[in-house]
Image (cartoon, rainbow, N blue to C red; front, side):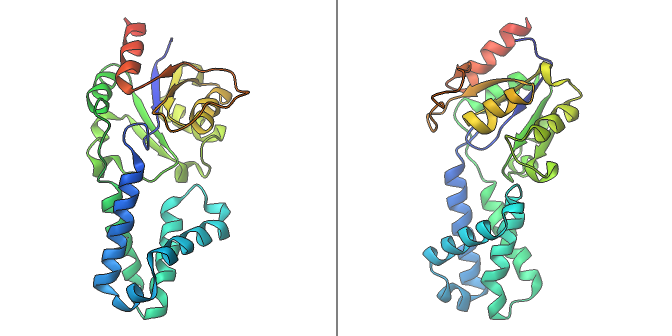
Length: 229
């Protein structure tokens, strides 16, 4: 691997995202219960999930912006109960704080620091995690979210935007992620090098050319740093 920069997926690559989203959903329900009891009584957990799916379906043009979709859903939850416009911002803040209380995979923190000492790393994510809030921004040269690019992975534009932030041509950038299509194949088709960080959550597409696979970030760091020496 001849590389000069890394683009790195976040959710399910550095940390498991499901526990954070579950905690964020609970934080939102707790906020509603405290600040708008009528809404809390009206909306069951199942109803809230159905509303979320409805909002996502109604706004496919916002599929790259999870934060905006979430705000639309929160506004719909609160609007019938006379809450001020600022309430939706406060409710989202409670959700977002919990969403960013992530637990890194055991090897991820040390491996990330090892890589950051040698190469610029640009976070590249379809999600809305905030590296500053999490406390990892010092490990990254920059961060690109799908909402920045106006499109989500696997669109080539978002990969090229990340390469631009790294000031490195795509052929010299290695993208690392857990999702076969969004990360590995998407990066490959955008002209980057790519590897699959296989956390055991996805199967490799049957008809896709194979990719180099690593079981965790420590294995990846060993291979990348060996190639640099």
